[in-house]
Length: 117
Image 1 (cartoon, helix red, strand yellow):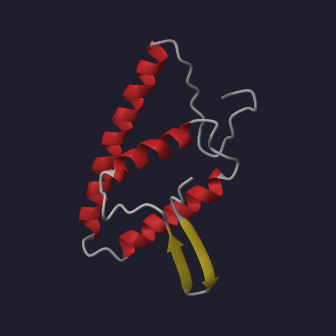
Image 2 (tube, one colour; image 1 turned 90 degrees about the horizontal axis):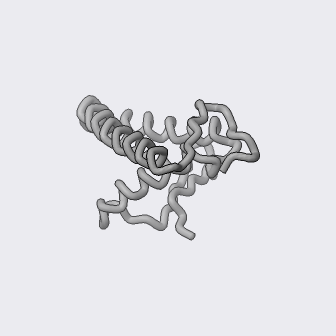
């Protein structure tokens, strides 16, 4: 098991981050991580605390943008990258269904039924 990200708050201003991944040393890890996280978000592997987790992820993203040297460029890059990954994910989903697989889209903040996998 790898620790993707652990965030611990020791006090109001003392927040510490830990990860086993080293994307600064191996940037090629990021596309695989995006794919894995996206897959988890789209399946019943996604747990019952998605509202809280997504809130924290968005807070981290906003904080990252807030301290970015070139915020507009970062937003543009994230927009392009997320569009590219969205296309790949949807194409993969369509191919999966075409080959007999079943896929159920679960709207944000809605848990899939217990019988779905």
